[in-house]
Length: 247
Ligand code: PEP
Image (tube, rainbow, N blue to C red):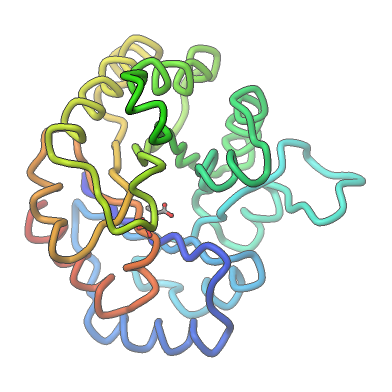
């Protein structure tokens, strides 16, 4: 199964969403074997659902709170995401880890909260530049993936996103991607048993229509989690088409 997810981060207003959907949906047709998702900022979840309903585009939250409800001003619960039509939620994006202090211990609580509300977690892992340069990439990935040990069975997608490749125009080399994705696969099977074989592992970090075909050819790369290039409907459509051709 191929999969492509647009992470819009804190970008776009309602008019941008409408313009995106209009251009994207003119060229998009759902294709068996390729899942397509859009993760808009919270205020655009409902309009995104309305714009894409029935068109083969899943809606994902960019984050969700670990508690079911209560006095957590400014937060959004997993149940609220589900209530707005979300199929999944991004967890542990490096910007959440870096700017909002999200830890593996916190993510270990968010993962079951997402699942128990019917959301598929899209768990992001990846090393910072200094960790790669210190030869610690696999150690870092291993410790970020350790939360899966207690997570039990359930739907799951992984994204390998080297932090130094996100939004920098510097995507990881094919050999680096192959090594990381192979390691993640081994860890998935170690933690989840045979179910770990079929968990999709996306690559994220400066994916563009120009480099995506090469990335899709790498073993264990199921698709992409895309930031910058996903804001442009023509570019995102080109990425979707690559996935559909390489299914
Ligand atoms: C991301 O935000 O997950 C991401 C991969 O961003 P970009 O494609 O802009 O590097």
